[in-house]
Image 1 (cartoon, rainbow, N blue to C red):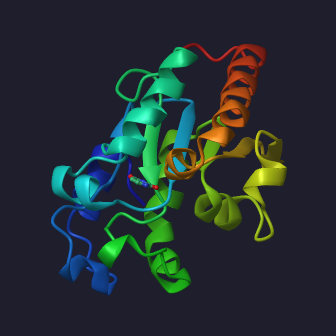
Image 2: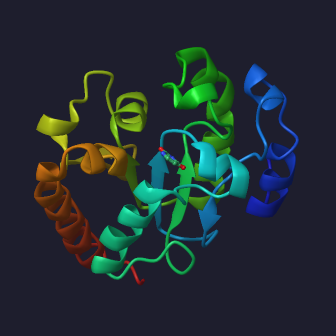
Length: 189
Ligand code: URA
């Protein structure tokens, strides 16, 4: 149990729980406002994230920032962004279930400290692990689920939008729903 996000981060930076620590350049703990009410959770660091130690800094990250900016959100000002895995899987393969099992306590502790009102799962990997194992992004995106008092929603991963730009309109709708939900809950951003 940690009392502050900074204590948690410092401990996480030393993590050697799984073999991914052997190949990482940096632990990618997360970025943002530590007491934000909205938490975004992606999959795992890619090459750029591993090099810079910050989530979503590649092409996909730039696209995510555009969607965030469109509804007045900013990674440094009013949200927090983290990933299911804190270390890069080699060659950007999908995280293994056992890697997520070993890494999830960092996220649990983050959520306990932050107490976000809304969690947005960015892509299938996070949504299937955190919302439901049978979550299908194409079918279930943009729906808010109440999980023990926290609202959870899954949307498209920016890498999927770069692969198939036809999904961008649906993703925009999800962000507009998020904006409505933020207003409805009276969250100050
Ligand atoms: N993809 C993710 O899911 N997270 C990152 O930080 C980068 C790419």
